[in-house]
Image (cartoon, rainbow, N blue to C red; front, side, top):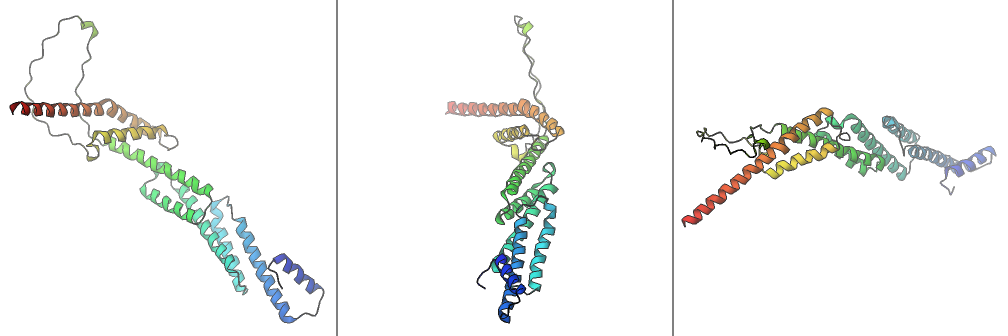
Length: 277
């Protein structure tokens, strides 16, 4: 029988059986075997087609089990499935499992409570999903979710750095009184006794460079703009605003003054050495 289309074989075989024709037994047996083979392959292909889009990922495990049972049933009937059919079954199974694992991970891990291990796991699942040709609808969504997780973690880590940055006392800056504008300048204050040398400020290693410190504060400010999308709570914003006041208005300007004073002192020292020569 020179055809591999189930509908054609089914129609011809039914006609032969209904007309009770005296046919070669071997030929009839071959036709019945082919009919069963095409029937099973058609059933498997149609089921695979129905799984191109799965509305609820929680049904995927059951669908994979059903697909496996269809192949098992065909083998138990001694049906020799084409290699292409088996390859399609394996590819579909791999895709469905990857899709299920990806969506499950995104549902299990919240952005606000994610950590670096969660990020690594989701990255691996995304790579696996793309290699098994999971729909871009899901992989694109997971890429966005992954980025949110990373930026949420980044915001929390920067805030922790700022909150654990050692506190220090800042010199008070006296505001000039406009009412005393025309009054005689007050006598210069008497020289105070030298204070005992204070221990060096315990500067964190990550903040040794002022530009790095400012960059971290600026990064947190940018992340806070997308606070709702990154699922950062109101309490987080309040804590962050406190640190912005501390660093933008006090610590960073103070560090700049210290660096400038140090630069001037080095310059004066160099000039003094030059004059001695």
